[in-house]
Length: 489
Image 1 (cartoon, rainbow, N blue to C red):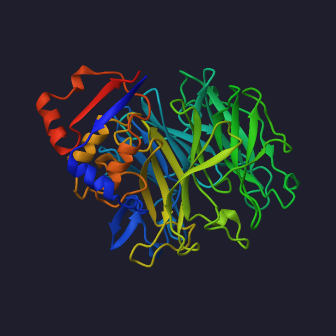
Image 2 (image 1 turned 90 degrees about the horizontal axis):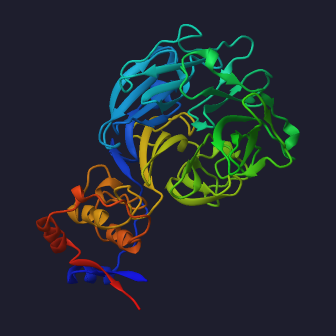
């Protein structure tokens, strides 16, 4: 057996022995004198009567990030007809620029398929279902005008509802969940859960290539204190290799948060068993995105949870959105809160982190959030009526700064190269680690790297990236003198 021996210079040993408490601050951006969690992508003040809506996030093959949001509110029609704005980051989320605006696009998700970018949603509230394609990274988009170039399903007497929900590939088909509006009645009980799929390699703009399942209505009797409806379902592959649709569930005042698992028997037929397929899920009363990670062999989600800190027996869980958390599951039925990403308990009526869409970037998770937060201009109208679209980065492997799935010399080099420095937009990429986020690289960040040293799976050796001796010398002077392996007998 082997162990890694780490020799540190005396100044590093000294500060480690003294020790420093970890900061509880989150990654922040100074906005009008207010430290807003995350990186601000765009802002719409409450006074405008225009609120940020559905966030979505995709990573292009060239590494650029693309984010989108639509807008709602009493004055939203003044900025466009169900408008969606597209934003791009070429530096992994540190800075963002506006790319284009799309009218008649709403409740949509971005995704990459065959190296092209797609946007699937509806042109307006509960209307027909449409899809657009961009071959230039989101700058220009196709315009849906017929069933062969983007109108996937006419509304008829139904109308459709959706959000920034994931797509997955399974058994040669690409799958996505949605809802129709067939039953009428109060929100969200009018929605029926459904799924759609198309063969891999087919033209996704052609409605003829998509197959739709039956749609299942919810029933208030499924829970003793009311199953008020389901919506915003996630297409996921379960442990048995089957496609399921995991939906958000609206529950009553003070009730535990739930989600529901609707099961696809084939591309035409869904089933649901209320006795076995309603589960406890932190954040299940709000919109969430679930993705599977092969490296950790877990399902992950970023949700807006209710916990002991913010539980209110007099409020619906759906109305408590001030705590963003990372959760995980081995089997999609038992969920664990892994970490609190950001929390503000000062005003549950005006603060919200919600509708988070996210992607894996190596061992990092990058997130777009519809955020209601103080902005130096009176703050958000309500927790629901958000004034920001924000970007966040966390990691599923503490100490892994570069996101390669391993905590080692590359991560230490980043710490040392930014040692005792303020870094731009408090960011993991500079060594300002998740859970610290104070905009400064120092002992707390070093402690996290050393405390998780050699965690994860070492990447394959690439001799082109091995440092020159002179570089190693500089690293030795800044931090490590020597890392070597010794046999233990």
